[in-house]
Image: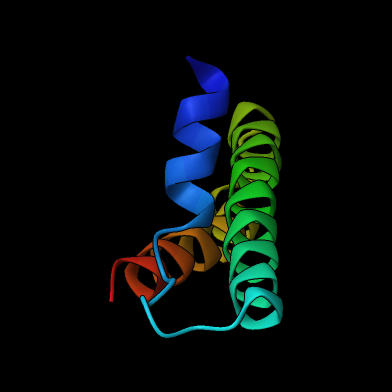
Length: 72
């Protein structure tokens, strides 16, 4: 089931006319952006748990912009 989700996410930006190399580049970019966004969640939670709300805004903002970019 997890592999199916990863495949769907990796192919989210692929177009029917894309070459295999272009599909690979798009999948790599999408999956790396998602991984960094997940890691930013850990960063945000760590700062928030320490009560550092202003520094916690940096990874939160990164997450929001990354997710918006992926959605577009």
